[in-house]
Length: 229
Image: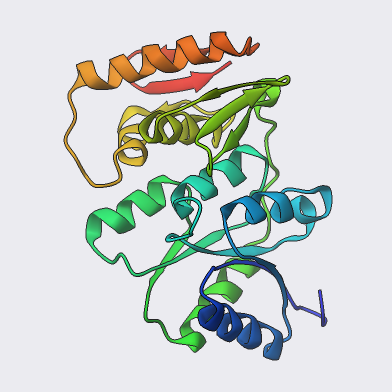
């Protein structure tokens, strides 16, 4: 932290103008910015040991050049980053906002935005304090840029829908994630999908977990949702 009461804020934004404005406003307000230019850099910078315990809030653009920010958010959660996340995005429709919250966001600010409002939201989330991160079972690693799942040196490719479905579950370790939350995360455009379609994707994910010899399994809790154990 740069000053007493200052926050450490992860800023993930590829647009140099917006990034410069956000970082400048944070620093002027007495906060420290930890900057990443894309999803890959965000995972690298925001999930090391210091960042997992030291980042207070993450400001995350959805439209990154290498990955969807919603996928990055879920990958960060899976890796143990529990700092509150504010999405910045030009996507302002209701289903876009709902998909952002389903992906693990705590707040949502549409572009163009007022910098003073962003600061107020960052500081409000920073006052909430940090949660204790539960450990993700099986040391699973999600790569949102390649849409890949890895465990113990083995990896397998996932479709975007498979990635989002699995990420919605792995980002909440120790919980039974409700089926509707998984569907909202996996189909962020608000599409209506049948139970058979969801069940088919679940079977494919189970097969891919077995393919990389993951020690955890994807379980269905009948009438509720899914969990890893």
